[in-house]
Image: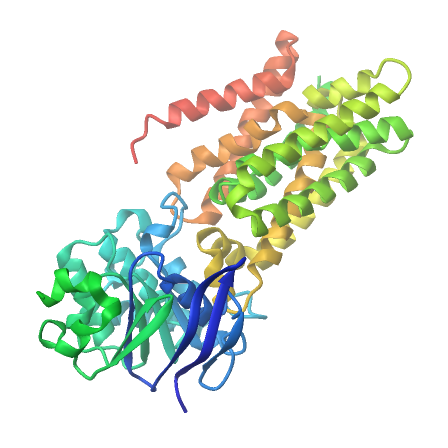
Amino acid sequence: MKALEIKNLYFRYDKETVLENINFSLEDKKFMAIIGPNGGGKTTLLKLILGFLKPYKGEIKIYGKSPQEISELIGYVPQHTNFSLDIPITVFDIVLQGRLKKGKFFYDKLDREKAEEVLKTLKIEKFKNRKIKDLSGGQRQKVLIARALVSEPKIIVMDEPTSAIDPTGQKEILDLIENLDITRIVVSHDIKILLRKVDKIAFINKKAVIHEGPKLNIPNDKHFCEIELIEFLKDESCGI
Amino acid sequence: MWDLIGNSVYAGILISIAIGIIGSLIVINKATAITGSIAHGSFGGIGIGIFLGVNILLSTTLFTLVLALLLAVITIYYKHRSDSLIGVIWALGMSVGIIFLNLTPGYNADALSYLFGNILLIENGDIFMMVGVDLLLLISIIILYNRFLAMSYDIDFLKVRGINGSLLYTYFLILTSLTVVMSVRAIGIILILALFTIPPLIAEKFTRKFYQMMILSSVLSAVFIIGGILISYFYDLAPTPVIVILAAAGLFLSMLKKD
């Protein structure tokens, strides 16, 4: 069964078509990057995959089900810059939130153990009792990844995971994503992600151009660089 | 002396419990403008109650619940214009109140007492309502603590977990409107916002966990309110402004602590 299958997808805000005839799929445990210019529709596509928006036409299936039906198996990692830092909340409190689900109001022993385990795996257990505001950008992003992972998702969707993070932190985050053993979708405008072992790339600019991996290396990939829709990448990455 | 200020001290403690819970949620959800809108808008319910000659608490409760639902729709579905629309509801509620007071024959001293409040004039009926609202708040926060905290940090994440964040936010606004109604006679519409937000703002700086913030907010509110009651009793001053000035002094002092 495909991890993600998008068929004939259209989306409109009012009368403006934002996404047009998007078709692609992703196999289980593969790594996909969704890239494209600002305003090209990548965030809309992310919201559709997460089930925040409903398609105007077409369908999205995650492991054969609609995103709403399978929401508990989707891990979501937003940008760390989206949140207020003033809330008195510790790293552990945030990670535990990944164990919340419909009908569940209190955390149990297993939830706490899982949260501890993920914090250790991501090597951020020493920050457990720190306030989120006391962490660096990269550490905050890791906390959000931990929150997504603690729910034991089959697929993880990340929105610009390397934005507003220093180069060392970016490398750590990308290494971490690369080594996760679940299906990964990363929405980004950071082309450094393309230098990683991505299995598939969707370039979204209203329509989608799909490039199949594996182990894509953009600077040497002539086919990718010649795709008409990725003009903006040429200067930055392809050197054409 | 206790005969004269006993009820107001009980009311102060009960309001402090409510401020600890709902005020902290207001501050971490950045819902200060929404709370101002509910508080000022509640004047519409007061005007309608006086005009119809019905129980003012009942008319104000119903009116503020309608406002809370309207504000929930605005903040959820019209996010991009919510700041302006919140201001509209603020003015609309007050306008409804003024119109109904205009239509009511005679001078309505009652209306003014709701604008400025007077905790020294609290009666047993008010205390019973406060106990009821406090119980609802305590039960709600015990059951929904984890969800409220998750909602305040990242409401979208609740959706991914299959939890209806919009419904939870609406419930938070309903609790806010009930807390406004229970406090309006004691604190007054105009100064409610200050008292609901100052203690949590101070507490936020000194706590690492949300439940600690709620507890500290309650304690600080009780100190400010009871302190204000005593000062106003001995110096024959209006209690609410004294309470707010004490709280503001506390806030400025707390700002000396660096983050």
